[in-house]
Length: 131
View: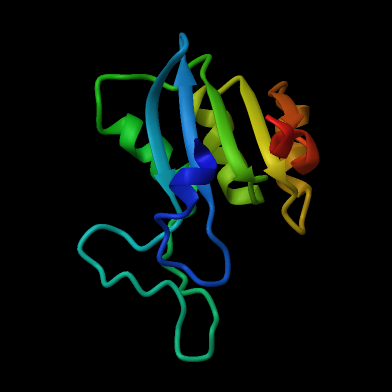
């Protein structure tokens, strides 16, 4: 389902989706993109990502923060493993498990989450395609 959400992104370089599940219910979702009220242009004229673009997991966590729900003990499903900045948000939000599809170029975020005790699982692309 995170994969479906990634397709909603207007970013051209990377399309990332996130789903947060707690007690077998989806409590939030997100995809990478610009903040509310901004044009949906993720990249500048040179093709570089604009600094203010929010990552999918940050969008999903922020949606929970604005609601009556909590991420505590939840599972986060991502199409791309988190960067180090988002890893801090994941840990501080109380998410206890991360399931991701593809690895981000920098594994520092995953290393941080492992050290923090977050359970991490990667779904292999070929296994995902069989289902």
